[in-house]
Length: 283
Image (cartoon, rainbow, N blue to C red):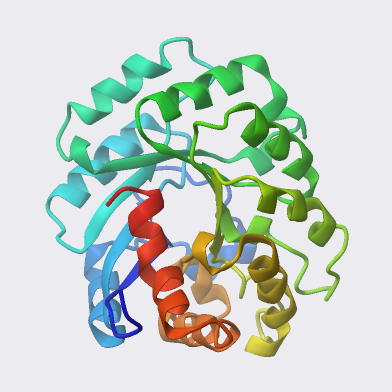
């Protein structure tokens, strides 16, 4: 894969508040509290040369995952879906099999749960949660870690305890870019670098910065640390569209990622912007 190779956007969403409730779409997020679907994203991909995308869950809903898989089946640019199942359900393996047997089921790539919204920072240390994540790995799927610094210690324990599961940390674990504080995030994420079963997405950063005044230079120290921890062979680009629209356009997010990742070689950048997603999600 070369730098001119097509880009894979490893993280974006769709939603429609007219069809379902999204409790996290608060008044602060009113600017994006409307329907977003393939018809909105496709022209942005065409304009930026992004060829494939991964659609990621937004609700704790198997019905949403079913709908996303059906959307992926009829949308050529969607390479796959990171969906949701109840990881605490003893029947999680059956739930995964049922999703895979439905329309677009072959495009199920991974599972995610909004761990950072759980009251318990040790949710990922629960034996039933670990059993569920193990079932995800046994099904050949990746598990996306949606965590902040608070949950990183439990996430580290889970990744160590389940070495056969491919883990992907979303949004660099949402570092405090707005406050320009590397710690304690930097120290908490560093041990993941020793775990070959963990990857990390360079995504969702503009909305962790100041929405109105951010510059790509504000993101640089955090991306540099991620490069130091994971290396370019375990980082993935993701737009986090349409959440990113709170702070930046799709093109601006892509440009910022390119600017902050200018240091690695062209081959390494090609991996971050596509090859690594192909590998970890088995596209």
